[in-house]
Image 1 (cartoon, rainbow, N blue to C red):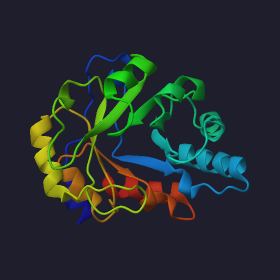
Image 2 (cartoon, helix red, strand yellow; image 1 turned 45 degrees about the vertical axis):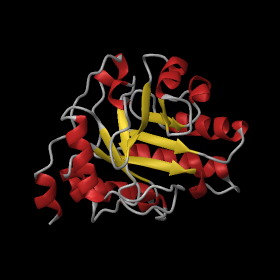
Image 3 (cartoon, helix red, strand yellow; image 1 turned 180 degrees about the vertical axis):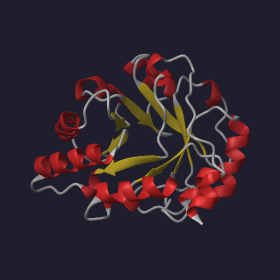
Image 4 (tube, rainbow, N blue to C red; image 1 turned 30 degrees about the horizontal axis):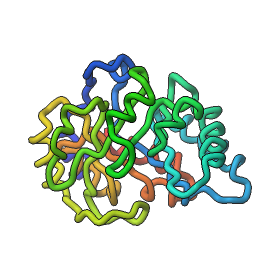
Length: 235
């Protein structure tokens, strides 16, 4: 069933919207989001080294580090460890929210949600060479978002989620299909929230370029092995 559904999905497109870095990047079908809730307070650095190395070995090429509650020092320390084991040029490391820390953290870009800095401010802070992702909409695309200086648009929540607080109602695959129609065929859409390996083919065939997943990977004892399983199933 997985293969039959995924076969109908287009391969992830190369997207050029005027930013040199993104012109050379092909989005994978799975975009892991490492939430700080899955990082233990004890042995934190060693945990991140092992995890990051295993993810790189498993073929992860795009990873978001998300820490909504940690102090700036913790964000920078975590990012430094991840950057050390996720080779620059091989794995793009995206920092959630904190566009002002991207350069200091050695990250490749930032993801901003509604309520964070605007996409325009994020672009100003990180410059043209780094990636900027932004929340694109739920029931419909946000007004003017297609003109924003971003490299990808996150849409959702697709399903109920346990790793991120939101008041928005799930839009399901039909909502993803509606947003794809509004965005046109060439924009990168990352569909987030509650996506599982069983539902990912439906979301991709509805028009998502990639599925952003957190709990579905990092609740497992071996997230790298789980990532491999996802990628094998979604080929």
